[in-house]
Image 1: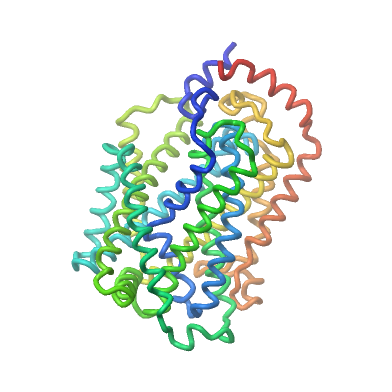
Image 2: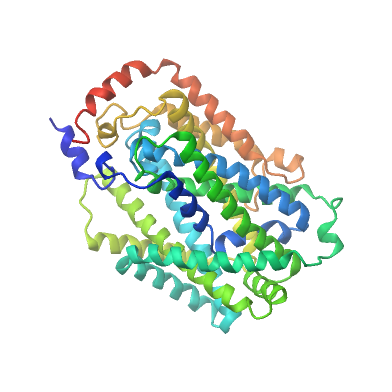
Length: 467
């Protein structure tokens, strides 16, 4: 008798079937336009900044986006099947409290991205108006938090408009860029260096995979009869084209002006390709960046509240939301102000760390959904701290940490470089190790799981859920 209140108290997390709407092709513009901002462009700036050339970094971006978007799109297909936000779906694999592990990873992502977004915004305003950088970092964060408090719904509408404005600018730049003549060093296929190539490849992959923390937050509004294949491909095509395109623009700017910072290089490249277009392009991309920062702050606030609610049930109030927003702002400002002047290197390091944190989770989550439980979950029990999924699921936790530990010798960052990465000359292939190890461990530990019996209970537990 106590199960129905559990889901009703958190009904905002579950979208009932009668409230599902939209068409599957709507996923294409959501994820295509979602990549149209300065942070995506910055991801394409990483490889050339490390000494790679334009041709090989282009190949790395295309391959990295293909790899990262593959996993991101499979997470998107979970939304229509369950009607739940992405992070909530981790409870069957990790447990009611064990899922706090991946929620903390999501929190690191939200706040970490915003720190770099604030640095990017400040560099852009320095380039355009020569405003003081450190003050601008704080002002940008405060402005984004204010928007999260008073205009979250409005910011979604503004984001779509700004995204299409920026896409128009990128289209003009892309067409004009075909007439560019880069230096021979930037177009020489014999000029291949392994470390910048792999760094750029996995930076692109990590950036796309990082969307996985809320990709289902949008697809969960679609009807349940939306097929896995359709939702996968509409997500994949939109995210891949949008992400790769914006990153390639960053690659062009870096190849043209390798000694300049991102904002200055992008403005100079745009002005050279189409005189007078540099400032408008930067302004549009800056506004798009602020809207993404606002959404990230909002996501960080909800994640913090969800963490607190998992430990001790609470009913969020406006005051609590504002306090969590201020907390996220203080942390992101501290990181941004402490960052070095080498943005490309620091951003590349951040993306590498995200990849280490996300790789075991994406392996466990997807293997559980598509192979072990085949999409059969009890929505009610996901919200029940004493339900069938337990508070701590040792299978998911062992698989996560097993995959993470297996990757450690392959880590290659400024903070730590594993022995195998040193042997490979600094090349980072940790993702290619962590994925199969976490997946194999999870499958092995699930051999004793009575999936058939659990699925029979799920049908009983969720009777009348959508009445």
